[in-house]
Length: 254
Image 1 (tube, rainbow, N blue to C red):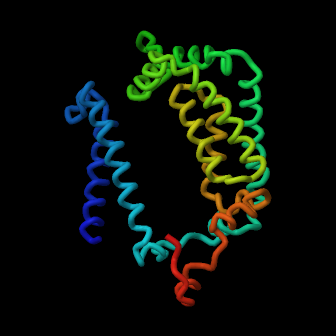
Image 2: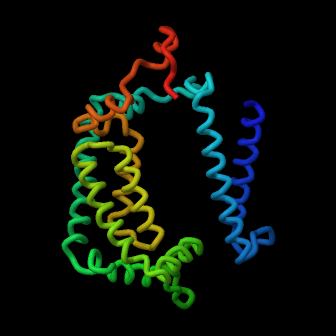
């Protein structure tokens, strides 16, 4: 376990160095060269990051995993872990839920989404365009532009438009009902990030920020909803505190 801890530290440091190198201006003498090396380094960063997450996940059964090493402020503990704080998150959850539901209904009943995906294809085509300098392209990152070009080349808008439409509907319904709120907020934030990477701001920054809050408050954000019953049925999160479990000899959940 100690060797694994040391290795994950070095892997994370290498990933951090790669990320910093990729962000350096191209006219700096120590900056990373252009394509294709930048593409390889980007892939290396993401692979190393995933490895770090997987290794850290194995630490969950470590006896020290439940120790609180850095204590947080009382207000933060209340906001993200007290069921009464669900009243604070309720209007934010409903606002976010209805925003996604209305957007999904618009796509489901409109043209260009469930009838072939032409609207999504047109959106991708605008996003991947590279205008003449000094104008900046809608997509900043080359890897994301390559991803969109891959989807366009394979005519994947025919099924991806269904995924977007029903994904928005599912996120909206989940948030409105307070059912698995943290998961719904996560996929909402993922879609917001996808739109932002494509160069579309619109309401995405506001929705993304609200989704992050709901993700952090996943234990209580849906308390005034179905999560009040769903989460205990799934075995989380309203169990005895870690210290109490340790005192009574109850095993820590893995």
